[in-house]
Length: 413
Image 1 (tube, rainbow, N blue to C red):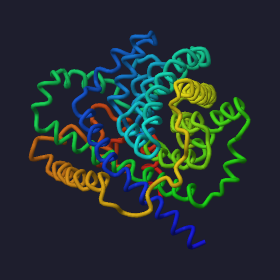
Image 2: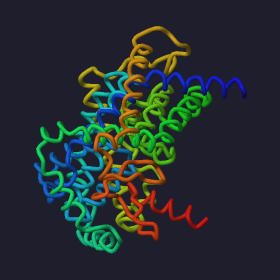
Image 3: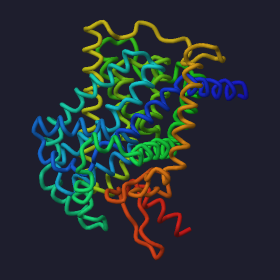
């Protein structure tokens, strides 16, 4: 038992070491995009689910890459203030699945084929969602959900004020030192927010890769049954995501372990896409939109994720892009003086610089329009929060209702 625990933790650490520089790079890019791309004008271009609006929603989602909780909160806010429901859900899917940091980590742990599959399959998934969701969700349910959301205590004018405030051109914003300080703030806060998911993801993946026998996964994922194997694996992949409680970048190490232990290509892809139906998020959807609409969302999301994984496998199989072998181990079992070590050192130095800029952001004029979520540590725009709570000491800002309810529960105890 002790040997298994030790080997699992070692596997988890070296998976993390293999991807450390990519995590820093991905979150740094994400922080820069969030600081320089205006969110206040998003709602204006997401008023319907015609192709042009869906494309804009997808691109804005990619630019607003975030964890699943924050993505669901922003999608809720956009929908509440007038964005089309389907396009808001497309935005949410893109902001967690069509992002740079996810692609880089996929490349390092699983290979370039999986990184490419993220974007090819992500595009397929968004097309499917645009077609399926309006046919599954009834207009009356959408109207009820919007009315339900408009009864809460969020500031209805927040997005309009934010749009006016961010009316400057991108070139102008790039010349502002305070924006760069805010970008550093986004990077640090996003890492802080996702630290638990990342740690859990790597630790669970280490135990899955080392401690769980192949026979277990052979029972979960069919093997050797041709087309039935591909279909069953694509259906089961989202179920594993639902019960794993791991979202965003944190589920990539577990995906690597699933691939290592025999899951089909499409099953792994469907699992990666399914971070938006983990059990905690389903409870959030129920609170935001009601039980009836949540059940329809789960059915539509699961169908879209599974079919996207299946179609991605068929496309890649037809193009001869599915990897032929599976690695003997997910990550190396010892340190080596190679490009990974060099890049990790370089990006640790860069991270130190980002952290210094974050700590000194006031000197550069940054941080004035932001607050820190006291629960998860995320940097929240005061003009566009996921949720707020008015107390005797002032207004508390949160990235999502999930964090707000957690804060309330802690305050009661």
